[in-house]
Every structure is written in structure tokens, then in C-alpha cells.
Figure 1 (cartoon, helix red, strand yellow):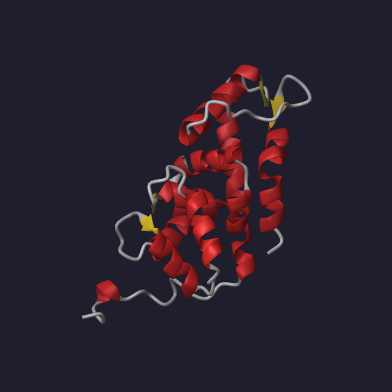
Figure 2: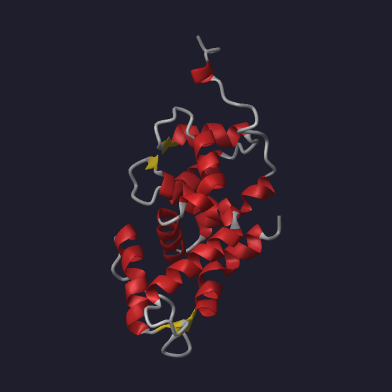
Length: 191
């Protein structure tokens, strides 16, 4: 029965992966609430054409193919790749499970693994920034910054969430990128 194709996992889909390849995912666990909320928003708006590597990873981890990932599926995938630190697995799952329902949606999973694809993260942050830079000045004024944060606030259920104050009354993309992505990019570029 277990030899049936439904129960077989293609060998090329999961393999042992060095721990340093998951540095970006480990960094996700340590990110601020703001960083995780914005990554989740970017993941939810990820164009399908750019999502293929993340979709492939999600499908490989989603053992029962129900479109959601339970803790035991993440644990099994991590263990198959040689990651056996139970505390790390639990912390990672908890950080990824933004809504606390004990199931990872594709967007929740994608937010955590996007850091592995640092060019994609920067590209999606720029697209999100441009969406809120409605006057095309290359800067967000205070009102635009407030709108920028609205979705992140709703995702995490914290209306107190704010961006760190920029030196001026406007925020350039480079400033936002440095504030939100610098630690993540530095870690993922070490690989």
C-alpha cells in the first residue's frame, strides 16, 4: 500500500540541506513583528511567475497535499533535510504561523522562506513601496507611510505598529529597505 504513487515522495524534491542554507529562515524567527508582517504582505501579493521556487518548496513540505502545512509536516521535511533541532523547528513554526491557527498557509510559509531568495524580497518590497508612493516622488510622506502600514497592522492585529521615524518627514525606498531588510539580506547573502 505504501508503495503506491500517492505515498511516494520524489527524491529530487527533498534532500539533505546544509543548515547555513536556512539561515534566512532562521533569521525570520528573530525578525521584528513589523518585518514579519511586511514579508507576509509581500508573500500574499507574490506574482505567480515569481513564486515557482517557493511553490515547489511548499508542495514538497506539504506531505498530504492539502494546501496547508501542519507542524508535523514541517518537522518531517526539516528532519529529512538534516535539521533535527526540535526547539528550532517549534520556534520556526510559531513565527511562521502568524494567525496562530496551528496551520501554515502558503502565504505564511512563503513569508518565512522569501529571505532565501533575497532578490525576490527586495523586488517585492520595491513593488509594495511603489504601490503606496501614489505621487511618484520616490518617497513616502507621513500619510503614505500610514497607509503602507495599514495592512501589516491588520495582519498582526496590532494598531500600535509604526515605522521607525525617518530623519526627515519623508522616507525613501533605500531608507525603508535598510530598516526592514538589512539584517535579513546580510544573513542570506553569506551562503
